[in-house]
Length: 364
Ligand code: AMP
Image (cartoon, rainbow, N blue to C red; front, side):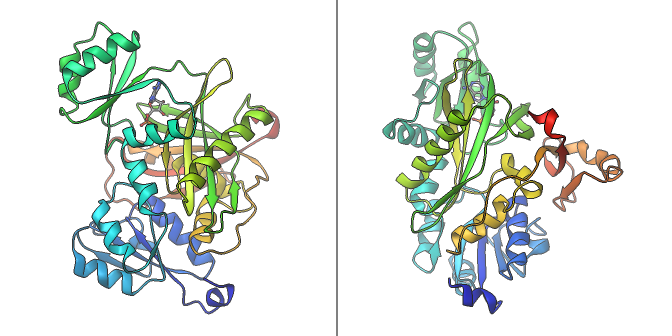
């Protein structure tokens, strides 16, 4: 993509997936004069409400995928659980960013952790689990509280069970459906942080500063920037690790990596996502270039913007009934409200988020 193409207003970005991350990507693209087409199996998706065009079809509908690819310049995605054959098919038709390897590694916790290990990136101790017998052995090995997680398709705390040496392990195994899992030691972390890095095809990168994340029932509740008690060396270390992980799989787009920070100052990588990330929504109202615009710039091979922050911010997710708090937030002229256009409110469903500027002294 050249800057001249962009000025013509004819550039079309294709996004696989119709959720809120696609919606906010489409809004950022629109500011740059870029049109977006969405491919999703869902009708009236959050992204389709703000896109130029949506193709509603199944991920294995090759005729629909062909039609979608023929109308766009570059294809990206807003969630990683897209079937690999879909991405392979699209890669034969158009430039797809991020690549299939980044997707494959992020889709399976076993591959992700092996990949981290191959790069020397520290993680919580873990073991792959294929049956209840292996779970019993692994618990003996870890010898302490642990978390059993499905290897694939887990999100927002779903597909996880906390276990202790005296737990009914057979029941824990069955509660997750008897699918391949990983067992991780429970890390008594001091805090959770995440870093998002943008990377272009030429290897150029730009890293956002880490935010501190607080989860409730396995779902991200707040992200606060700056993350308290993070010295410069640790911030640089987290950003360097994220750059290394992105570079080694030649990722183009955004990579988010979540870390546990231990009391003795170590960073343990928990998981990664090759797309915009909920924990960087604070950048929308605090950074010179937010994560969504940076994502669009990276996948369209445009110059990256300045990711630095000009103010301190707290992002709060509006989950399920939290949506009822919107009138209160509206009464606060400082609060920046982002709603996702979801018509059905369900417990645990992310309905929107609010960014509230923090006085500098409070955040430090
Ligand atoms: P995940 O889906 O792996 O991001 O897990 C969701 C949340 O569960 C994390 O953000 C943590 O708050 C918590 N969690 C996950 N794995 C661990 C672990 N090994 N030790 C302690 N807490 C964890």
